[in-house]
Image (cartoon, rainbow, N blue to C red; front, side, top):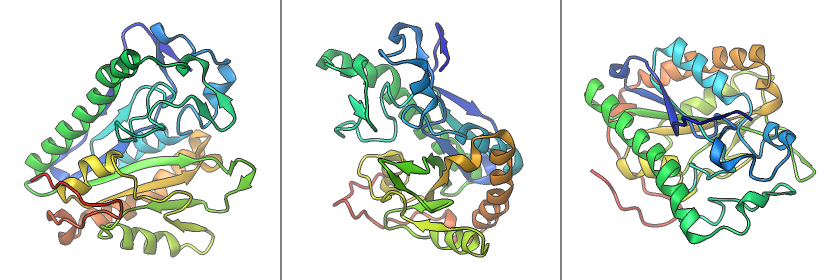
Length: 269
């Protein structure tokens, strides 16, 4: 875990916005602002998956470099507040996560919840919205949004066999070619909506892609494969040409509303 007195909720990695591609990393870091200390946890907990998505920052930065695409990295630990949840989601600020009690989040006054929303969660989503709009304007077409995540090899005693998973709701424009390209490698075990279901109402993809009709995909890479810099770079090497090919497809850069398996969607035009 790292801390700093001057704390920005996000970092923009610049790239050619006219390419029409935007990379996101909701859980890139395990950092906390000074005022939150360690949330009552030992330092070792911040090296676990409960605090951030291990390996994702390196993968995302390398993808941004290879693709010359802008990326947005979230700067704070998901233990402070989870940017990849709706603001009414019960797991937005966790008090218990994979066997660890987050004492700094329990009890949590309504005023503190609102403070974290205002200082960290909303600025992140404002930045996603602004950068998405900028990419749209620069490219003259609807952007492709790709969110990079990672998952732990074992969760609550259950082993996860997938090397990579693609999460999605109903818009399959980017998903079908992405799954096809990954499955072309016989050494990979590829999950379709594994290890999680991509239909999560209020998450980042829902707020900024589904409601606006933008093609998108969320990629989950198993953490043990990208925990080292060499592993993370190797996965960026694998993903970059696939994403570049998908980004060149005409149907990817059109606004189309597919809705959501979670229920009716208020479309934002």
